[in-house]
Length: 185
Image (cartoon, one colour):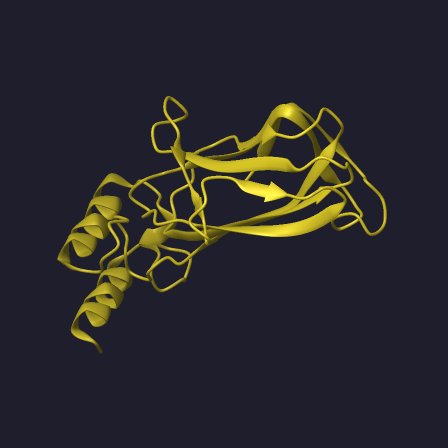
């Protein structure tokens, strides 16, 4: 996944600050966002923040299911709509997500409060589980996935989820693999 920034830069804040290599330097108001929608069963997101200032900084994580036309708030594991990072501290924030692979999502982290001095975000991670055999991305493995593989074979289209057995090809063996998953064999 690639990320871009708005009103922020990539900098190396130094040893002992985030991971010490390259971090996104942010000043209010700024954001960092994924450039393309991604389809997975996302359940968690996290990022590490370093605030070298004396002012508390506030950040939020949002996601869009319509290519950025509208944004929805992701809530932290503490059910908060924004994360506060005290001055002169480092914190890893964690957000709950409940997105299915049938909903390609774009993500952004925005600095919404704090001073005008630089703070940093680093090690942004999105966690997901994709079901083997869930070719159509609806969160279930069933006969519609068999139909999806048949459509891929007929049309010649490529979908990495269609290669259920991982042999590099989409063919009848993938149909058999999905049937075996459905029947528990």
